[in-house]
Image (tube, rainbow, N blue to C red):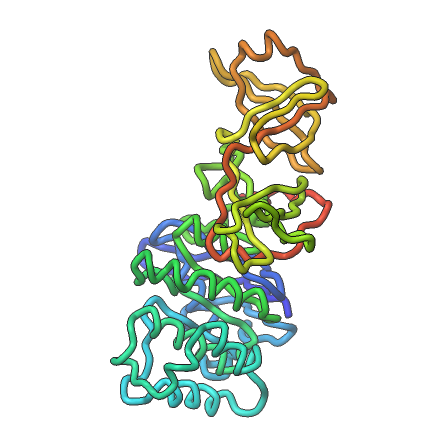
Length: 371
């Protein structure tokens, strides 16, 4: 159920012009500064911007083109806004039932019981919205969007109005929910951490246009400080053998890593953020270290961007990681392309939520830059 969007919307001092496709399953993250057009794009896809010209096609069904414009209530969209916007006079049960009635026949995007359980709202069904915390209201809003049996789920910064503790509470729930969905999800956020934790594909918006796009692994550097930052997102799954000595082994694209069980308790799949400045090299036969995370690679190339610092680009299972080293290190350890080295990962930051697909052997594609 792929999504194809070709839209132009003009306003005084602003022009939205998007021509792109979104995957038919998984989370497409729309990231960019305030005013870049993220929310406007979601509203246009949902049919809430009558001034938007162009084409919207979801799963082979045309919602809009030069001769056709389906109104919002006929587009099978689940929309979650920054504010929950629940009906205050209806209990939670009533809010969900209203969405089900509007949707007509058919099942939820996920089984109803699974949605209620994952979002943790079974005990809230007989409460009114005014009796719920803001975090609880937002969880109910997500359930209501899924109760409408959408073909496309639009999330417009659903965590933006929450404080840090509530956000930390909902983010893992949202990650688990999105992992199970078989419909496309467009998720808007200005939080790099949120994008890295939740998105499978990332689209960077700036001044109403998509400037770059790619997998979360390929786009991590852009989100962490710009195209050349070299930051990487790894996905790992718990090894069936389990944990030993209070540590759990996770298999990643680059090899196994050990993590404290307390950081990953109850999680079978996680994402890690790795910054090049948090790595170093070991060179030579039999090189050993007390650092738990050691990955074998080969030298791809050497760069000398500074007077005292160099970068050794190390190939690890198809991906290249730029590892910073002092130039003095290269004087005592001369390296050439193809030389074997070991990369020490001094820190692997476990991202919140972090539910991801099993890692594969292929390298992530490079980001696609747009003119």
